[in-house]
Length: 202
Image 1: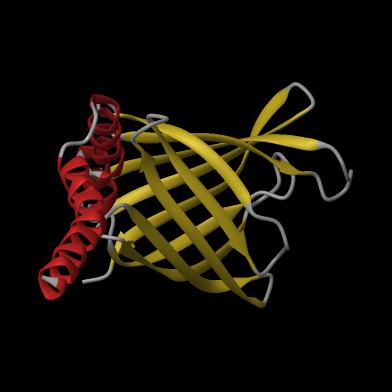
Image 2: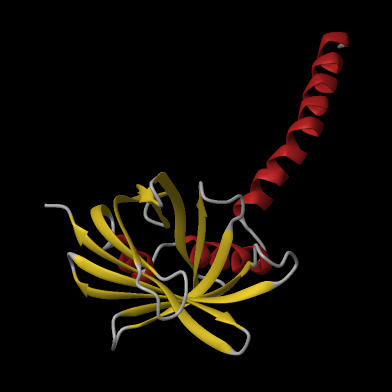
């Protein structure tokens, strides 16, 4: 009798510990409507789509030629370099690694571009060894003209605390060529300060 009583107590104790765990597992297998909606929203936000494929078409190795205007009407300064666009995180982003020369000095730049499914715009960042700032821009794509347009601002190094509005256009000429144009608004006038032509390395 004693052994049966002890065995019953052990079984009851085991059930007392096991049943809550089973209940938790059952609950985990049946998420609430709110949890299901959250998971669906997360999947939609995290899944690469056509805009990510569009960015992915730029991946590869490129040569580039730069024209930079230090003053309106002045002849441009010319330089050349190479760029490598690499897809990251299953195509959610592309990273641009740039190397070249500028003003007789070695130039290195790094860009990260992606498409934000939630905000529904492209996002681009830029940093290089000619400064210590990171530029952030958001943009859109016009399939009719095959042009990306990014807008943002940067600090005026001659006037600390003053922001300069910038616009960057990237026009896709073909699968093997595209052109980037850079504009700055100083005062009430927007001026073109840079143009870079990219050609895919064969």
